[in-house]
Length: 266
Image (tube, rainbow, N blue to C red):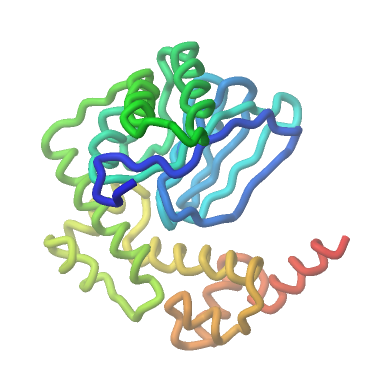
């Protein structure tokens, strides 16, 4: 599909997870939604943990480091759809995904199941119709709860999304809060207020946290040395990287990687 389409669907599927089954920490290139059809589990993103159960859905945004795990007693069964497109943010907002909460309620679960099964069954067919796929996709989202925002709240959410997008694409550079505010088009004091409202932390705190989350991912999944990891994550001083990492994790980056390697060897 053309990347400039209103909605592009990249893949979809379903799974009945084993107890404690997990995925991540990982980064996705597209939006990805999981619809919980049975059971429960939890989802972590942006330093927050969300309990998610049957009749709810959780959203993964592009370039976010996320982790999710099935409950050990009642593991979830879910279907998922990966997508993007020009209408994505508008559609997500209408479906109930306000920016500080990646969870929404599915009001018509049986209808949602039916549309998901139809989407999955025809997606890989050679003669699948793009309009049929897109139509099913919209029907799936029509089963989600609606949230209506005041004009001021919608504007603040727009600034917040724009700031997050800038950070996620530029965290590896030596950017400052003033650079982010300039890109968004508001002053840094107002941007600070918006981040406190949505995340309960400052822009600088979020930027450092995002860099450290990315560093953890790289330490787990790549063989880059400490200097390469630090530079890739926007830390141009190795001692500063080590100090911030230890403050957050209680161990140095080198110790963290050693711990991960030991766990993998078990």
